[in-house]
Length: 160
Figure 1 (cartoon, rainbow, N blue to C red):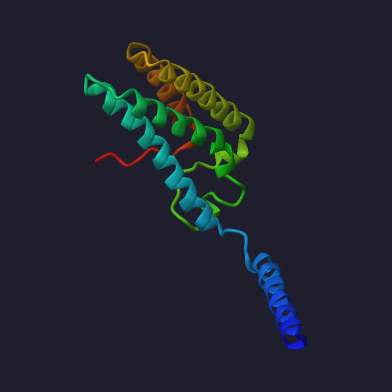
Figure 2: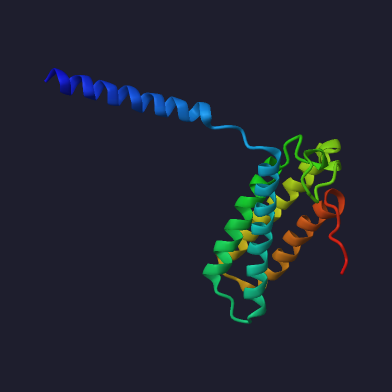
């Protein structure tokens, strides 16, 4: 009986060390990791909008696909302002298309990000209503809001 109690005590103490050690070992992400996550998230946002555009072009859009991608785009748009912490620009030494203006003009950046979120919210509402004729114009408005940020805060991609 005594052996069993001692064994359980050691197991509990070991588990507590593992749990507390896990939080000690969990490091903040590096600028490179933040930039990679940001780039992946921006690609996912673009992918959700592209999937909706492809559905519209098909002539027979699947409204479930439209609503799901609108929600995905909306969720990502909501998170967008958090993807650009200080120290994740050119100074990180990692290739990024983010211009320094994101950090030197933060109010303008936040305004553009908020506009994208507003338009993405509307896109969710229109897609949920299932009216394909209303989705196209709202997708254009959402794309325009996305593009506004690109003009001011993103290095243009190289022309081929």
